[in-house]
Image 1: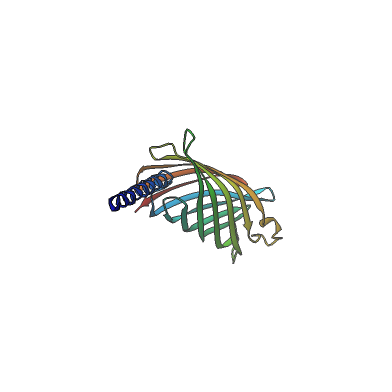
Image 2: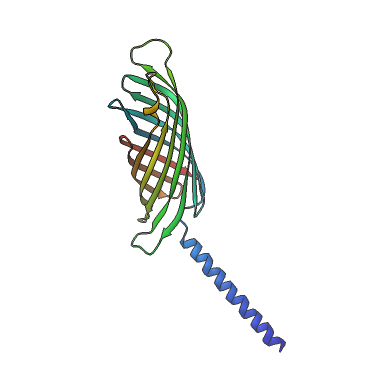
Length: 226
């Protein structure tokens, strides 16, 4: 009787072990990234607003720090300098800081290509100083803010190739460089980004993207993962 009980107990342990192994294999199958942290660089050009038939353009470059887990989250922080242009005004070498998050809510693995679906949010802030071309003296200060909310779709083509589409809105907040009303500088605009990430090695990745807010732009970046 005792040997029968031991046999049943051993059998249940075997079943539990198999179930645990199966659950673990499914978890690995649903992994979307290799966990780690990275440091890298980026360059971005955006045209985010149009006032008086003139586009406001930013060239933004600097350092990006990232952290990601295997399944759900990628966090990043950007620290860089922005050069802005609008009408006859310029902002030279102004600091701009941003933090962002990708939350990967779902992976569709039954398609021809695995598809990751998630959300992207980011906030950028900086104090810009606009100066009119050819003018002497102090410029106009601008407490610039940019808030981003988007849905994200990312396919996994294998060999480290992953195209991505981001669709959502951008909320802009700031002050008029020319001293007129600020209403036109506080807008919510649709935003679209289409890009490609290529990771030929687990510790290195590069990316490129085209974007559109008030006008076309682009971004490029690289990252070293640890």
